[in-house]
Length: 250
Image (cartoon, rainbow, N blue to C red; front, top):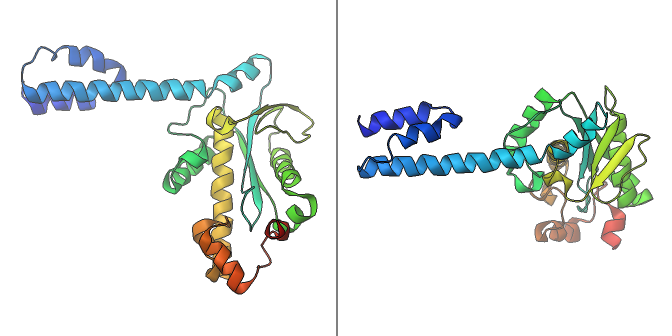
């Protein structure tokens, strides 16, 4: 069998079939075959670790489902730190046992990966909702209360409604349903990770729209965070109506 033929067999094999297939060629002394076997062993190991990571991200949903909760949502927010724009929050209910490949904490993903996953999440979700609290309300009630309000609005907007919430962070809004807070939940729970991606992508789109109104501030790039470019623009042009005045005073 030629090396190209062996490569074709490996490329077209199901993941679970690979160990049995490469075992047939491990004694082959050809350098090209040895490289192929090692390559597919590494790919198989990487795939196994990724599957284990994703299965682990379903552990909390499965635990609360076993306690009788039927619609468990993940909740997260984006945009607590910027000097301008709203804070966004999302709530997502995924189907029982749903695994979304490549999902992770939105901060660990590229913009392109987040955009792709955003559409995958919308396609599979039982329910999802995104809510915003604008800069004026943040100035009025402070950023912590703004974050909690946005998360509460996101959960309240779900249809069908959730009966339990997994909330990223250390504090949960008063939701009127069972809830558990999870520090670092966007990297530990599938549904919280999904919510983190929806919130991040939605807020980034809002800031891209604001870039059209205020191009000199560079919102398209920094999304309102306090970069050197942003601070220089504030110094030169002054704050816009979407700036958080309490943040600037601080």
